Image 1 (cartoon, rainbow, N blue to C red):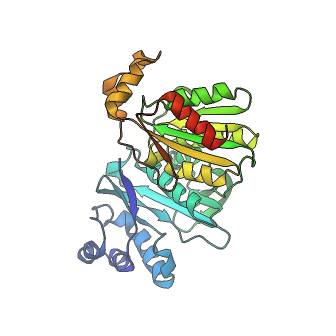
Image 2: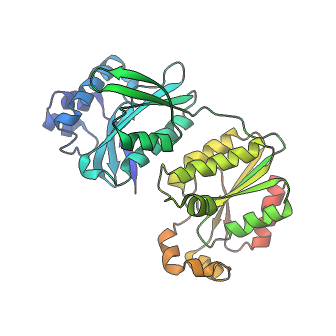
Image 3: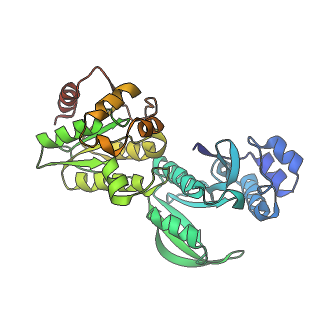
Length: 337
């Protein structure tokens, strides 16, 4: 699923605040749904139009349109640009016709990724009514912790929850972090296992497959808890002086921001690799594994994506011509393992 938040120019916000559907459609960068033009969203547009008129810098941060696969499915954004204390407050609402499809989880993940990668941002707040069980479950699943309560003029009692997103130095100058991404059957787990075999006492293998599939039995969509667990496991090991190898498909959309932040925070040497292997070769390699009967070519074709690099991760691309032994040797030399 492709999901974005399209922020609106002041002219569109003012048209929405005035209930002028024609002008709003003319100024909006995306098609607006009946729900976004309706009474449930009117108060939000009125607040944001007045706010952006006074503080133009907030325009790129406040409520915009959630677009999933080209269709407007809700609204989301922060309450304002980051304040001087490095705080952002998040808000989102999904059109009732598009709920229970994972859009809220995905858009929250998108906004948390932005917060973590924005210099100076240290924490994200969420204010949720105690009656809103789905939203409370969602924010708590992403690590938000309740710190208080407040009374809202429109919504009444709200629980105030906070998530720490400040950069934290990880590991030491001596620790090594290696990320090995690739499609199923590309050989990434073989390489990760061999790295741990060479360093059995001081290297932790953080396997996306193990954590997501066996520990959590969770899906792999953007904003899912599997992303947080992979991140937490790698940080835990680095902070205890262990070298770490993280391996998995680790799709750029779901895991990209997490991997960039992990690499940014690590004090020691970090090396990242993408095993770029054609689909037919991944199937051949998978057939030689002891777990070959767990899934086959049909499932692998659904999972396969042509080598998308993670922007900003500075990955070394390793082609199919490199054997597992050659890839292992390359990583050991470049990482110092």
